[in-house]
Length: 235
Image 1 (cartoon, rainbow, N blue to C red):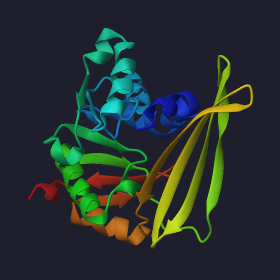
Image 2 (tube, one colour):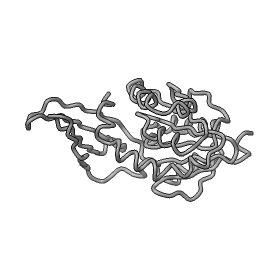
Image 3 (cartoon, rainbow, N blue to C red):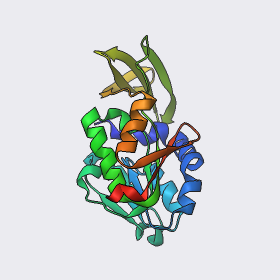
Image 4 (spheres, rainbow, N blue to C red):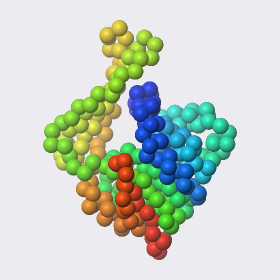
């Protein structure tokens, strides 16, 4: 697990993006908010700061929860009193009618199709009728050629932390590799690699699956998909 590198390299940008994407919707939440795949807690912190509603932070990975709970420990007591950490997936959380907003950032693409459809059902269960899902959609297709992207390096004492993200096609799916490096005086101290698979999903497939779960897709913004739960979804 490469959780140790997440915040040092990406926290500042992730916080800016979360504020831009989710703060307004969070401020309108009254019943509750579910943060799916809470990770190290950047989005959770933004949601708590933007809303007075209860927040459910869903994070199955123990390494991520270490960072998440450390971040929560530094918040005001009032904010900590409003957040519950669920150490499991949304599908196994038994959250029912707890939220009028579900946030799903950077998660759906790594779910296999059957698991993804189960996730929509769990989302519908967590929402109250009329509640909103804000979703970062998976890639629609597999890129025709490999890609490589560098994450800007960060200096920590004598060490420089950096990362490179590469993607390639793998049997019709998308293989993503994060390579993290720590360098000191131009020598590599250590390297850590994390690799995972993403399931590209055409927009029409995504919309169809959401509709089957009782979620109707509305106009989104800032690269997000917005879906609303209809009253009939409980039947």
